[in-house]
Amino acid sequence: MVGAVLVRHTGPPEVLHWGRTSVATPTSLDVVVDVRAAGVNNADLLQREGAYPVPAGASQVLGLECSGVISRVGSEVTDWSVGDPVCALLSGGGYAEQVVVPAAQLLPKPGSCTFVEAAALPEAACTVYANLAMKAALGSGMTLLVHGGTSGIGSFAIQWAKAIGARVITTAGTSAKVERVRELGADVAINYREENFLEATLEATEGRGVDVILDIVGAPYLDRNTRCLAPDGHLVIIGGDLSPGALDLASLFTRRASMSATTLRSRPARQKAEIVAAVRSHVLPLVEQGRIRPLVDTVLPMDRAAEAHRLLSEGRVMGKVVLTPPGG
Image (tube, rainbow, N blue to C red; front, side):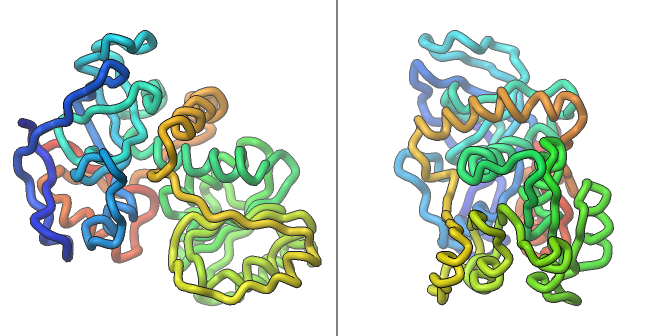
């Protein structure tokens, strides 16, 4: 039995409490990680509310990423050893003192990052690279529009895109957030509460539009997003309001544009392993060089997970909220 954040029943943040639970039995291809820190993601809030079904076989404990030290290695695992500092992409279980992880979903903890920063890395890095590099083929000289530039994923996307030589336009909701995304490297920052992001994006690109859009808003932005696309542009939707929305097919045809909607948690293990391997090869070196640094807003002990969820839901956070084991 280990300490973990448990959910009494679906509902508001107050349903979260610190208790004890059993850890899954590791297979020969798994490792056990003693958790030093765990990132908080919007998916955790949705799961707590009962709006995000847990994939079959995944831990019911919240938490899709963590950092820590390996304390046990499966008999068929050859690339990792007890004592290795790591961070991990999880299907669940991060809000706990210990978690079982498929070895293929581990990343070495970057030496340039603390354990807290490393806990904020896997979900954002894997989401950004899988969608912007592997799916949308964003490259040097291209232009990216990122919605929610101060979110964990948005802040990582800005830094990664700038590191590979892309131009970045981003939206944010306050003057403080606009200033922060500029500090992260955004070339153009749009306060979407004061400006029409479609008009501002077209003005910033001299009417051409952007090559790739990373969207976390969903249906309310669908029409304006498609009109922001340049010829052969690609819109990637990774969350937000998934209610039915009108899609202007003529706009897509005229631009030879394309779009995709993806999630990370529900992907098959093989796909997750491929993404993690690609991140290790192509993204971690940029982190080690200091060209990308996970943005952490607040650190709280796990027994204050309810407070962490409230902070994230209020929308004032810039970057990630990270949890650490009580007394750790």
